[in-house]
Length: 131
Image 1 (cartoon, rainbow, N blue to C red):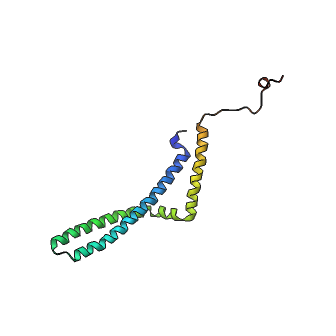
Image 2 (cartoon, rainbow, N blue to C red):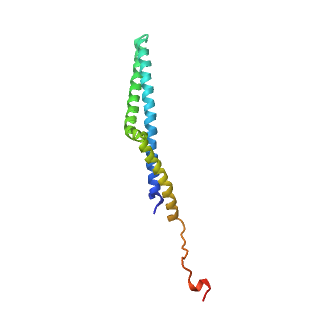
Image 3 (tube, one colour):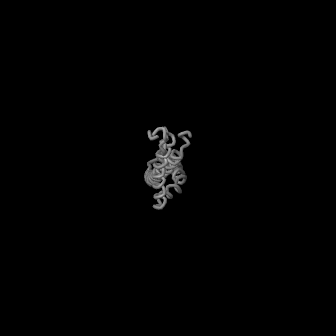
């Protein structure tokens, strides 16, 4: 069997994917929170702008900030269900058990892919020297 198709590889890829989703969710959430804080700063900059030109520059930055926030929020929502699934203690236990299963599976795959020998259980009369 091709090593890429081994069950342990598929399970590892699944766990890596789930872990990546969780990480992406938390990073995107942090960026959304940062953009929310930036909104307050930009609104105050607009309030205290001295002229139209400065207000326009701030408005452009505000628009860019809101677009970036939308992208981050979309990333966050795309991964939210998986991240919340992982946070559940019962599900964390399942993922931990899958990690243990991977270790056992790898041992079995190494045996199946490695060199095999057979050791006879019964000695042949010719080879044991008793006639």
